Image (cartoon, rainbow, N blue to C red; front, side, top):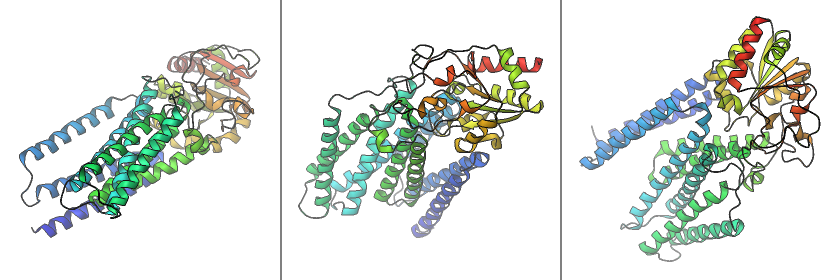
Length: 482
């Protein structure tokens, strides 16, 4: 088979793989088809990577034994690590895993662009203007994503404090980093445009400065952002990862990498905007510094909120639930921490068997990454039609007999309606509009916003202090006995 035919076959494999990405992303619009979309996208990636491997093998002269061994070992290590983490990671650690994937993706894209540019800079043919621009953008976005994602993952994992960390001389550092990146970019672009000649040594120095500026900016960008804003940060870094991959695709002339990167970049940008809108804040405002003070468990019952806390037993809560006509369950990060998604589904099914109408209220930023609660409940096979987004479910709280809050904090805090509050203006679930409220929570600890929740002192609220899983199990047993 001639080289032209081989390339044609491989090119079609790339296009089919890209089509699988597009269709897979479309299927991910719905939880009901999300798994199939994930499988289709993964199949497309296998086809694209396999086609590229075949293309490399059939090149004139083939590959050296060392090159082949490096690729095979890379397949085994990367595939093995991916399979292991996918099977063993807990749902509570999924945001950290996504951050790690962002870091790896951004770093890989930057390395691809750097490697190709170094070959051009030290070769006989200099990089043209378009290639230089794509390299600079890919290196910048990839470097920012690499360190930024590592910091975000460290905050989520607890290795780095979740509260906003002020970088000494932060504004000066940011301005200096931006100036270095801009100057390096201008020099490389003007050199590629033929305005003046650049030696290979100076070209590599400028590229190194741009890489360093991107790595530093990733740190200074994410450190001052509080944990409450991490879902938006993860979405933004995901968008940057895709953009870096697309730039790398332009550098090496690979259409499937361009398409895949563009899809990730576009979808990540849209999701970032949606998440910021859900918090009633701009992306720029979030990047300027988060409002959270970390995952603090300190604090009084609800100091300054007024009122007192009313504690109830599982038996008291069970009576309210069993004789209700409508129950809305509000899941939060505490549900994920306790891995109690199966217990909440069991309780919901028991209530439905008693004729109770059960729905789930999903806040866009509940949990620590976009769609965290949707994925968690889907894992427990909760019926998709019962999962209601905030705008859809909020009007139903007025007619709801009991709102059952399981581990959700900031997204239910009525303080968001008060001017001057740290969460002021953030859209919340209107849990306090329900006729009766039950909150399952381990303690009176604060959420990521670092403030007390006024919902807990609402006269309609009964606090069931327990781990989410244990509390739901106790509720289920008590409902069965009613």
